[in-house]
Amino acid sequence: MRKIWISIGILALVSSVQGQTKSSAKTTSKTSSKSSATKKVAVKKPAASADNTLLWEITGNGLKKPSYIFGTMHLLCEEDARLSPNLKKAIASTNQIYFEIDMDDFAQTMGTLKYIRMNDNTKLSDLITPEEYARVKKYFTENPSIIPFNMMERFKPFMLTALISEAGMACEKTNGMEMSILEEAKKSDKPIKGLETTEYQAGLFDSIPYANQAKELVNYIDSIDTYKKNAAELLTVYKKQDLKKMEHLTTKSDPGMEKYLDLLIYNRNRHWMQQLAFILRTEPTLVAVGAGHLPGEDGMLNLLKKAGFTVKPIANIVPVTSVQSKKS
Image 1 (cartoon, one colour):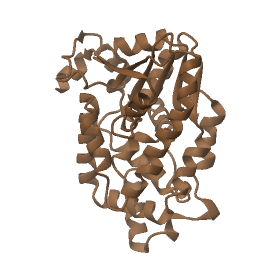
Image 2: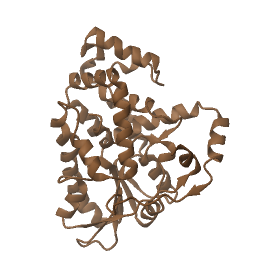
Image 3: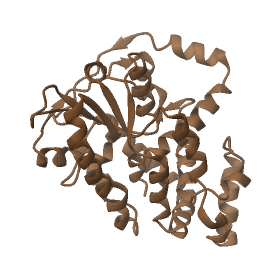
């Protein structure tokens, strides 16, 4: 399931709450020194292929003005969660922003806390062996989250995996592309809307047996080095904006989880397309969804074409800061 985390917007809220709370505990001296180091900017070289982009223009099929679709990643290091000039132009030229869920709705944000718990008072210890439970508890004791482990015991196991993703990032501050887009959209008071609700997305996790989720959580912790390698590979592919490779990584899911690809990605794509066929005709729109939803036969780009729209790749070149140049 390592490759599918890019497809669930509710994880953006989990990660953003976790990241914002963590960052507030940092000293201001570290923050100020980092911000001063990011002033110099160099231009990043374009991707090797014109199709290597996360930003696509949508025209035709009766649209008077272009709309756009952009592939997000819900968890990045802060310096990687920045917008290209063309993405900023797309935000400025459209009248509304659609995320997977409404990222600007306080009720949705608070609803996340309500829906991340398992049903029927199920606890993690009910799903795995005492030995496995001890290993999970040991991991979260040695890698503490802002949420105490005794509170997390009733969380849906995939939510705990999201917290491991946060802890596994090799940076002090994290962010997601959704939050960066939201920030930019707020500058011009763009209406923010969602294709789904947090209740619906959380319900997807209820469709996957909790025992399977718990097993995957234990596998994550037992093979944390492999997980970090896979996460780094996915991040590299995302930064290269290589949708073909991203599709390969998404469909090459962990053994036993392939049957949930329709549930988590393709069925949702088809449902979104039904909405977008109408939405795109009402207002020029920027649609920002997990990048794993874009490629493939049942990906959003192909579904848009099948619906009669024309999609065209738009260069998404992000200026490189001096901090990133030093890292490379």
